[in-house]
Picture 1 (cartoon, rainbow, N blue to C red):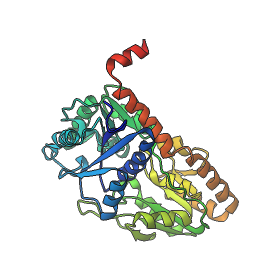
Picture 2: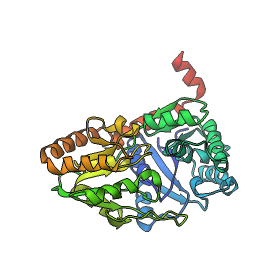
Picture 3: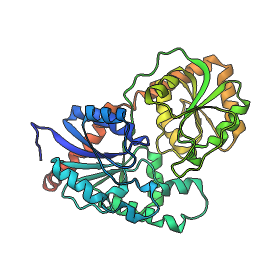
Picture 4: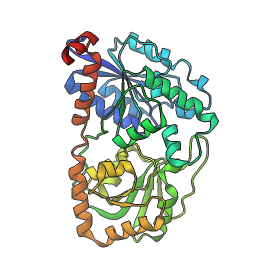
Length: 369
């Protein structure tokens, strides 16, 4: 189906509280080059006025009064999401559904092709963070994701490392396509200042605030920490040595990344890691946890450390602080690597998947014959 003077329209789900928002905006902007319009269907806490303005500049925005799966304890609280998505798709003449939570496809009944992206999930998080089996009270989370994967015509992961975790944790009905995340911004060029910068949802223990705070106590350079330390459920992580900046606007966050000589991510679980990409695009020296995702994306472009060893992180920060030649070289390498993670490349890969899904089955068979 080709409508609107040759344009096709996709419905893309998103939320306002995580990295999916940035992913959706960057991707949708570049998809225009491939003649795709985007209707954003938002779920979870409502977006800020600035986010609404951004989304409406790039596409259309329809916010829904339904929660995100990781915010609820009972599957019944997600009832109605599939019907809501289908109703929006019908009302806006949508050609394809791009869902950024697999669970959103679980109860979907649609004649349209469905692509789901797993940016992260509690099941793979648990597999990385715990040795014991998934708790019984979370079994429904695994089941609803598996139903969503089964309902999808294509499954996408932002890294091969996360795809491997998905294969380990789920019974998947088909292969996973890896499409790397991206940013458009050119962030390098600012004079670097002698401080270390990190950002994240620090209440999530996988972001590893404890190790970062421990390293801040011994670091010769100030360690700045941006992001929330209080979880939606009210729990809070204590920070004693790093400088807390709290939750920053996107512009303020980018300003600190531009100026930081060192950008650090101590994450234990990271399906992609947007902060590392932003730091690399700014030409900062990257100090990264030695986990599969970061090795996949940034090998030879960063100094790595054992994320469970605070002294290992201190050692990396000390090397960088003492050696400006090393910082400059690693910043150059990271910047060069970052140029491969662009929205143009991301949109081309995603548009290729869309085209395949929108091609009638009979024509697909004829092409492969």
